[in-house]
Image 1 (spheres, rainbow, N blue to C red):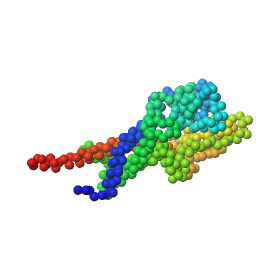
Image 2 (cartoon, helix red, strand yellow; image 1 turned 90 degrees about the horizontal axis):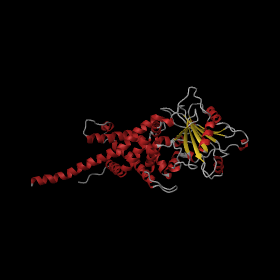
Image 3 (tube, rainbow, N blue to C red; image 1 turned 180 degrees about the vertical axis):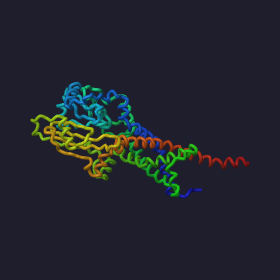
Image 4 (cartoon, rainbow, N blue to C red; image 1 turned 30 degrees about the horizontal axis):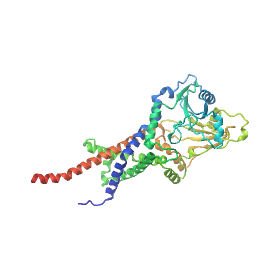
Length: 432
């Protein structure tokens, strides 16, 4: 007898078949996302010799300019950016582009002025990699990130290492399933991941519809796991309740993740939000007044002091040095802590006079601008420091389990249905 059509059954079928179609890819994407959540902490834990420095009794650090001079002389290149952490036990980070083909850092800077070289970028967690995850080699990409003891000037190494290489592979699997493509070409792996993420959005929405019980009085059943039941009931409850609890954050992760997969989606989302997502990638520094070229340039400490006068709080600094003689110094500052909003304020300074050209405080931005600027933090879980990372780690772990528990639910129902269909045949045979 044909079953009567119901909207609930339609949503259940959509949820089931979309889940089965994308389950393997979503399992890999969610698993790699879970592993990648604490990649920075794991790297620092596995190689403490590089990522920690001994703080002397007087705790007086060498000037950034002196450290830059030492590093450039030792590595034969040009420092384009640096990071100064709030934690005195962590080393400074310098992004350095090595000379290539006999070109000095100064010559490359002049080339950048003419528009023939990429703009110097602010050093960050992704420093050491170019667009689409390319490593920055000598004279290419964004350069390498060097870890330097700010108290002794000792070069402790680069951010590259076994752990870093492992997490690069994890990130590659997460974004493109490790499928490589030439720059400018469509990456099939990225399309598959993006398509599966779109499917995941529909899976979450249909899952929420299915979660609501037929009878309102039974709504509490969807919030708990009946541990006294058999393994099939426990598996069903884990899928049902954990999926509900994590659905809101998983929807945010999926919707923000699509910004890396498809340009059309990112542009559409930017139009809806009312502000450009990832606009910092295309933003160019303001222009310094060339009339001050004859003056002696301020020190980096002077730039920092000027910024502190505008942003009077302790925090982490990311400083992008001018790529040519006309660019401004771009200094980003953000607070750190277990439960602290990880939003950077930005100040652009004239490289010759140190005068602030533009101040952008996150708190002063409009709500839609804050959302657009926070897309990366909302996707990777860094929006509220370690606290949000823990929450995201748990949600991603749940998301990894959902394709497994969902497939088991389908398999158990399939076996039950098969058993019912064969039962009458056995009964007739026994009577004969």
